[in-house]
Image: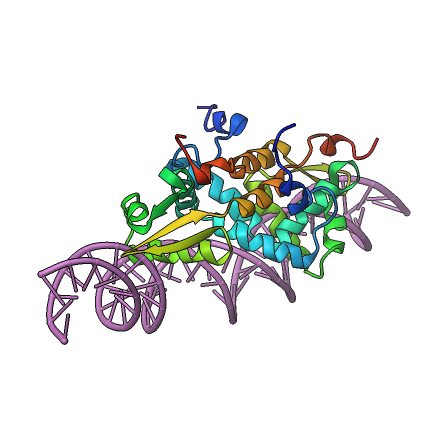
Length: 121
Length: 121
DNA sequence: TGCTGATATCCATGCCTGTCAATATTGATG
DNA sequence: CATCAATATTGACAGGCATGGATATCAGCA
């Protein structure tokens, strides 16, 4: 099936609406876990804020004091969960963020403030 | 405009604005890591969506097929990173979400779509 | 073809984490 | 005080993960 879990991404239900199913939770948790590392969070930040919305691996590597395989590993993690995409041009590989994926996670956490106080009015 | 997101604007800059400092990244990554587990994500969802915006440990435990210490451990993780608070009433402990903390993370991921295409016209 | 630079993969290692059984703590109640 | 129910803590174990060195792949170039 192509239409796996795409309905969710469109209008991502706020966390408080209804309990997350286990399946949804697994998929979303994978993305959050990928963001749950300072290096990866900074990588996403660097890529998202880079000129043209993309950055090559060398740009990213220069921003850290980590070995190149380590950066490559983190990029793979972010790519595997759908937060980054990559494109090769000549010798360089350029990464860019997937805005829909970020928006999905953002919408999920955007819990209406009223919910904490009252629900049914 | 009504009483919409005002604190959000000061809570944190969108990811794309400028590269995250290492310190900020560490703090934010801790929160994302806490959400990076399916059980914990569902716990937050259950608490946020529960009647009155709070849920006792027994409510949460019943929603999983995990041992009680495991749930207690996850609750502690979420509390330690500031995503949940707890209050003891009689024999029961009630947990509720911290909306400001969720809003902070949500705002961080709310990257403007235009940014991926062009930065500053 | 061979060489060089850029990036990815493989492998090993030490640390971190999710899980649960056992136990401790806390509060209510008899 | 004794006991029970709810929750937290401890200790242990298996699996996961971040890191880096060595190495492979890939693209351009002479």
